[in-house]
Image (cartoon, rainbow over all chains, first blue to last red; front, side):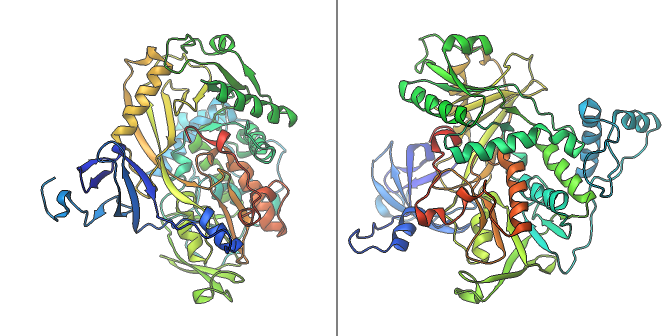
Length: 90
Length: 456
């Protein structure tokens, strides 16, 4: 089970969240090449390493926020804590 | 320890059905010692040891083909390279043990009632290979052709079932839509009333579908390949793939040519390297400079204590995100949808077990007193169109049999057979053509989302 550290609600079960994933910028359709469009549509980084990704706190504060997670261990690096104070109470 | 277990179970299995006397089938290759009921009785009565199922050999410096991944796809590919094409200088490398990934963690369901004509043709080839596999491998894979029901709980789902049934019928697949009353006749324990939140409105019925003992398939392919000279190397992790002449860094990537692999047991030179690593496919292909449109997710499953047989078919419900079958031992095996967060961590979660139990009770309220024995997870290599990626790519000699998502086990034999043909002839066989990596460039996707898995 992944415990996601929400910056507003504190650590909560993953079922409270929606995993949005990598934030990608949609290429401009008027200038995009077919390779860029292919990459935007289909290619996602899939490392067994730290990734920066977006989460949405579905059942709590309903805010989007970015977190760094290790995909092999599901631990979060330097999670922002409530009140944006590191080491603050949950 | 593993081999002792293998020996015992394969010996016992042979006695339950696959045991037959020396037949005349197959080529004139060196014949393995065949399993038979007489052999079991003889060895059992005299307390004799069984022969090792596959050899443990030192790693050679060079092979004709190196297959990365000792699961059902890698082992089947090695087996068919040896049997169908006489290519036996082959090494199967696995960083763990044979059949330790998805091949030993799946829910063992086989079927061919897919949504696209390309998918149907491919999976049906696999099903027909599964049909004769016990005899071919001289190992009882316990294929129980018990029928496969995909339940519909809404008009929209029923419409997809009708669509699938028509696609299936065009290719001579036994598949049709049946009413709730007909479902009740096949599986009396299902609640077909209007009381549940999601009442059953019909089902896609696929009589040739069923379940197979997945370990026996892995061990059978490994044993068959070993007897023909293929080498299986367990605990041999590939650290890098050596590519020359490519456009990317270190000569990798587009236009490059594979010359070998680096492993934790030394370097191997090989002109052909096959990636059959499922959940780890992106990492392995990255070593050759090839980017695959794959993300890795976990899929979880659970099994109950054994009870009397009362579920005679495989039951799937997309709406309830669950599929269930009863094993020959009487245990209920449950599976669900893939977890939404990409991860390489093979761990189960309590929230999965909770939601699974809830859905099961909605479907079969009568099992509320049953206890779960255990649950587990496996890695799935999901592609954007829920179809696999097979065959050649932009790096010469590097071949993929990946992107198996939640439907890899049922595809194992066909994938192995067709990949072996592609390797031996260096041409893409007709069945593999739709699943080439370049389909994402051309926009020729094979969309199987509606039939490949539940709950997407």
